[in-house]
Length: 195
Ligand SMILES: [Zn+2]
View 1 (cartoon, rainbow, N blue to C red):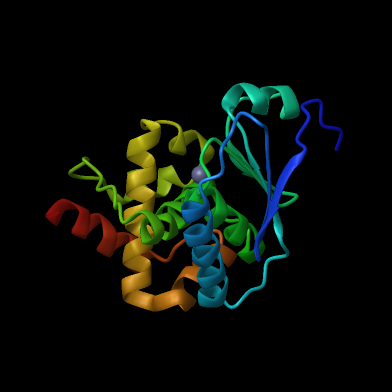
View 2 (cartoon, rainbow, N blue to C red):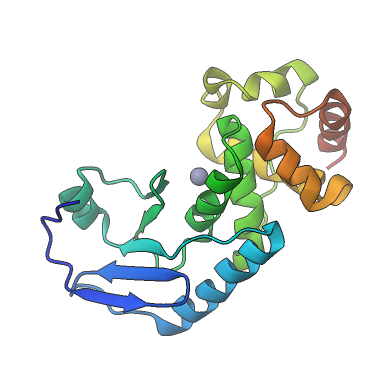
């Protein structure tokens, strides 16, 4: 990859190669905590991720380097973010090693795991979701039919329930399969109405 922006600055931690521009001052406390989080998550899922390239860039810099402003985790295993510790994007890197389920499950996985780092659990504001509506969220069309934050909150809450009910093995099954089973969907849509 040819970088147009001069990213001379680099920090190597156990799990990340951080690249950043001279416009950024490293937050070592965040980096340390985040590195620990990534190690613990790998252990939790029983996988080892090769050291991951992490581009800490402003959105303008990101556009210069990658041609797009948005932050994200990319399939060849690197992260771009405006933060030093995007637990959401790092969780996508772990998720991509486990499998490639529908976007709803992938986002739910990232939201649920990032909550462990950020201590923030977004609760959905939606009160009822029918089983058919839930199934529709598994399609790309359905996923984009709700506001982004709302669908992320629903997905994260769903994956949290899977973890409570079936543990890490249940989460892994969800990451391998295309669809959650009917029992989980029924339970989740029922629980959502009780929140
Ligand atoms: Zn995401």
